[in-house]
Length: 171
Image (tube, rainbow, N blue to C red; front, side, top):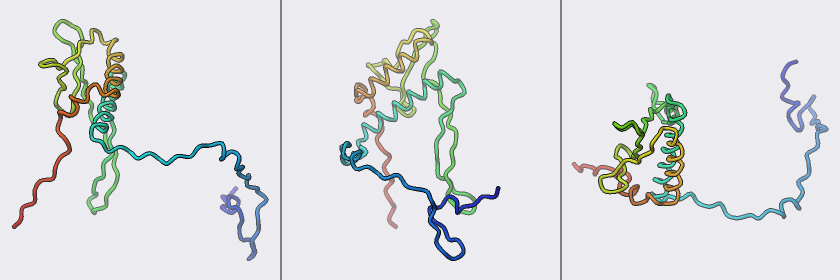
């Protein structure tokens, strides 16, 4: 059966005259809308600390995925230019390195990173003693809760802020 667009249209032209289809639209009841409470849409926060928290939670969730699947790679989207100059959105894999390792005694320790810098929880102590690999998902969940509660705000704010543009040279 050939595809007929006019079967999907409410009304269509047939032989020079407008033909109305038999399909009926359901009437929207206003009593349903009256039962809802309408509020203005909240604005997305542009607070740098909240953005850093969200990014850290995302990286910790990546660590959980990496623990479950050792070949996990995070996917990022980038705008790239083709040879002819056209910009296209490209999705690329980004290698995710693990934040945990075994110490010489055989127990697992985990570190957290902001960029490439490790976070120090106390002076000279940048690692968390986990014990065994089976306990690692629980530790990651606890860290996610701590980040969302703002307990690591001091450590997150110590990192570099947004990149500033270099000053232009005036000739």
